Length: 218
Image (tube, rainbow, N blue to C red; front, top):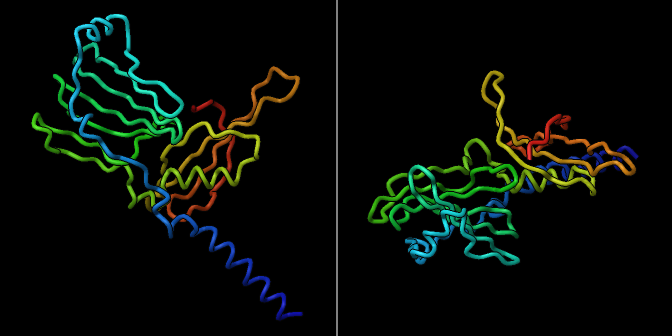
């Protein structure tokens, strides 16, 4: 009986460790397409399109998978092409000046979280600056992993609103993800469903705590 109990404890410990390392051992899960096609290296605006900016933004494409919209900055006159992948909830942001690509970056739309590589280009299209928003040294658990962990922890009817990077200083800085989750509205009630924050350790993937979030962050 004692031997059986010991084996059961070891098995439970093994399963627990395995689940904690599930994402850490497979960082391919963090990948997403950061490709910028040659056609997106420049932008040509017609006179008709220029006139349309006087009325607002220009929708280039909108279907089941992609939404592409042009925004013109009112001061700097730069034009941003925001290409939203509806399947991954990731925005590809392409910034142009005088028709030349001068910058690119990516955002996860639930929380407007900067992800992947942010790049600045010179007038010849050469890379002059990069910022790595992956921050793998501080967040070995990436945003996709943190969301997947919260999906397993939350109730089935709850929905994920947004995600943000957070940290707290003890003896040294400790990094974690805050994944915000909302309960559905109670039946026959005007009250809003509760919003929770799942704080997930950015190194181990362990759930640190689940706390009530008074304001809707998404």
